[in-house]
Length: 464
Image: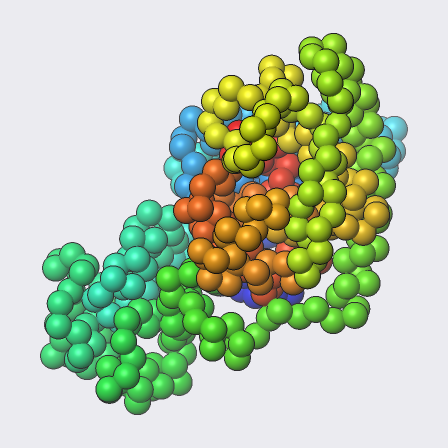
């Protein structure tokens, strides 16, 4: 993992992005050269091609990022990836055409062939990635991980590695001297009589994850762990490993001391000022872009059923302050006629026909942009919850109140990383992503979340 402005990116994802940027830029230069048959080839033409090609590549990479082609956390089915690849290829053509319309080449070059070159290369790259796997050599992006421990925590690390981390090879589990019973598969347990340093050297381990349920009483070979770290092997505890690789702070592995003495949770004046200006500019741009969709939605709601177009609802915001959130009405007016608050569920009969559509593509959330301008919300942050549920969840879930140390958001890390939460268990799982955001939030992470949100809207993931 590589840390950039407090957010952790997979090394393979960054290398893949860099490779795509270079290849698409060179495709534009090559198309220029072939079209001119070398007659107009010069240093000036080369740099013109590189500069425009790089801008095109940035647009294509942004689209691919939103569609999940660089996502190191979640696996997607092959049919879904194929559909996204076709969509990406088509959008790449529009991106290239838009760049050439705003920043055209000389008249002797054909826009059509340059656009086709970008679409062709994008299609080939994505086809290879979907059908054959990563473009980069496996040796360049694959890491060998050793889990120190054989208990329940070690089991959770192993389960994560097997299910979601294609760029990681699990070497096995090494038991602590104090562990009596193993929860992991017997085939993965290494010889407990072999020294940790010898195991690391023999298997070429890149990273050790310390996943012990009990650390006292000489359970960890501190000297050997230090020797491994001095020799370039990364050593991390289970909470840090999940934070870096899964983008969440696991409630089952974190402690108050880890949160207090670790880094993060920066709420400085400069960060707050930058985030506020980013919110204002972003909300204004989004309001202008989405205004036609909002007008159509308002008309559709008015035509379908009697009642208000918008609805207000109290939500808990920064430092526990209560404010009214405004959304397009997507449920019947008698959705909670008994006065008892309840979460929306899959196939909820209270949702109207128009409501199902606007919730699927998140249009019902757009009026919250006015709350962003007002200052009650941010573009990016934890989802604001109703006071009734906040009181309940604060008592049942540890560290739930931490999410109120930043402004709630129209979108957030939990929303793009986890499906819609409709229970205490779902809320607990989403809190792990919210804690990660509160701890590591930055402008870069906000931009990453906004790109991911585009992908969520395009695919309808997690809507309810």
